[in-house]
Amino acid sequence: MELARLLYISEATRPIGPAELAGIVRTSQQNNATKGITGLLVCAGGQFFQALEGDPLRVSALYNHIRADPRHTNAVRLQFKPIGTRLFAEWGMELVHADHAGPIDQDRMAKALIRLRLGNGLAADEVDVLLREFRS
Ligand code: FAD
Image (tube, rainbow, N blue to C red):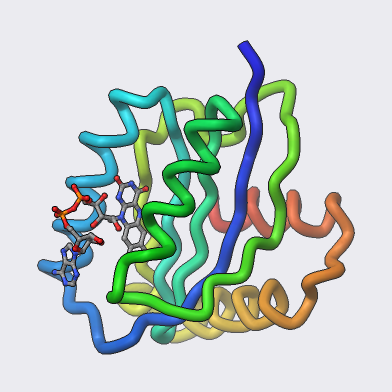
């Protein structure tokens, strides 16, 4: 089966509380499972970063659907590339909520997201390092 990973970053249009975020994750886990899509959603300092892995057409269609959600804006696609194996195979859609982490982790993640936003030209291996960092 052909596999691709899409990464994007976006900005929340208003504060998204923990209950609403949990709702987004619950919906995502249900919907994505039916499409064979796995991934990670990072929320830190009003910014989102999401990794979507699965069939390229399904991933692309889901990204277009998510992008239209008025709860976020300024989505920038950072990567959409074929992959051999999934990084998040066991994650239907895992949430990493930095705002609930300790101050050091919050700071580290917010800085990582800023690097992603500014570094549209980040080398592929640098992006992989950041992804593994979020995963851990
Ligand atoms: P419905 O629930 O019928 O909603 C219809 C429209 O209203 C959609 O455009 C929806 O985006 C919008 N909407 C829904 N709830 C609200 C609300 N509380 N306030 C404002 N607008 C609302 N969904 C997935 O399936 N998989 C994902 O991986 C995924 N990731 C997401 C990541 C982010 C950062 C965000 C903000 C949302 C994500 N979603 C994801 C949610 C997705 O955008 C849709 O809300 C969800 O898929 C339900 O779609 P629907 O057409 O069945 O919507």
